[in-house]
Image (cartoon, rainbow, N blue to C red):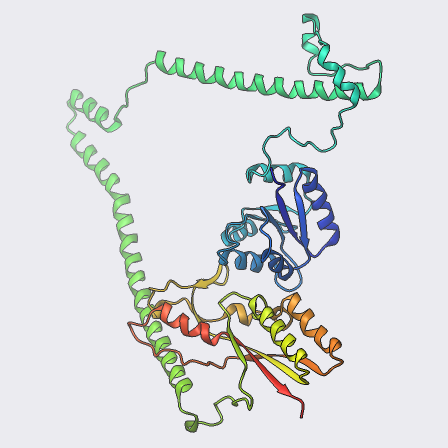
Amino acid sequence: MAARRALIVDDSRSARVILSRMLESYGLQVDAAETAEQAFEFLEHQRPDVIFMDHLMPGMDGFQAVQVLKSNPSTALIPVMMYTSQEGELYVGQARALGAVGVLPKTVKHADVSRVLYQLNLLEERRENRPGLVVPPEAEELDTQQVEVSSARAEQIDQPPESHSGDPSLRALLDSAFKEQQIELRRFMLASFEAFIRRVSADIKTVVPQPESIDPAASLAQSYQKAGDSRWPWLIAGVAVLALLPTAILGAFYLRIMDTTRSLTDTNGRLAELVAGQQAQINALRDAPPDADTTAQPAIPATPPVAVEAVGYGETPLSGVRVEKLRALLARLKADGFKGTVRIESFVGDFCLAGNAVEGYSLAADELPARRCDVTGNPFEDGLSGAQRQSLSFANLAASIAQETGGDLRVEVIAAGRRPMAPYPAAADTLTAGEWNRVATRNNRVEFTIEPVG
């Protein structure tokens, strides 16, 4: 069977080394990355069986990385195990809500790693590939020997013999065998005891008759009737009133909650209308002709872009196919002896999103009305710094071209903000999230422009 692979994402070298040794002791092939960006590049070519993700890292943290992994269909099914020094049910709940299968402490032990690997079905049997167990060559002669334990020493089976004569390696093997026998015997005794308890409980239920349920109100009424007391109807009426009192209280609470719900619904409707009106005004200003307000229009570049690449929501702008596009463009310009600058501008598009700030955002369903979007914007792009917009391979490629050409060919990266290339659709009741997001994807783009010297 091919070796299982694990990917460790942690900026601490010591933590990576400790966890790598533990995983390798169970026969796993281990790869490591210092940042989430390096992990994404690795996942473009490899698919590990499990990812161990640190929480606090420079650049993108563990929660953001898990969100990006789960939003990508090619990596969404890879189990992610967070491991961190953070504690508490709130942190565990946040990690699981984002898609992590669990959380390990930073001071991880062999038992924790073993438990996780068995839960993920990455180990076949619990006694396979145990770390540290070395079988000497002399143990092969034990196949022809028999170990007899007399009934007089049966009570000493929980402890290994105090001393053995002969080779030390044979003594170590016998100690290990006794410990293994001890564990198996305890498991057998525990299973037998549980089976005995279940059998006894079943026998008791069949032998001992169950008492019949007694209605206190009925028995009290019968006793009053037998005694001929004329007060029993009043007593029954009082019991009925007491029984109806909780129902009346719950009904009052229900009516109060319904009134509050109606009020909140009306307020939400008014807020939705206000937001729709503001969005319509924004769209009108955005779609206005250039001569309406020349100060509000972005400057049109003198040189048109040679290539435009759309960027999906949640993707790092300068990574993936954009890296290959830049590599091909630089190779062609270098071969032609071009001297000048390659300007790369990344633009932000506003998407129709569903979710919240705690659990994260994702694209809303295509058939959802655009008015019902939780957020219309791009919180992923707005939260990226300049360094986080570039993958490691993109940054290395942009920095190396100036050295290779002696400064004749350079790369300039610009975060251009929001400058829509295609106008967003006007607000309407029939507008869907899918129609809006198709325009937002065109506006969430990267443009490549070449500017010669002089």
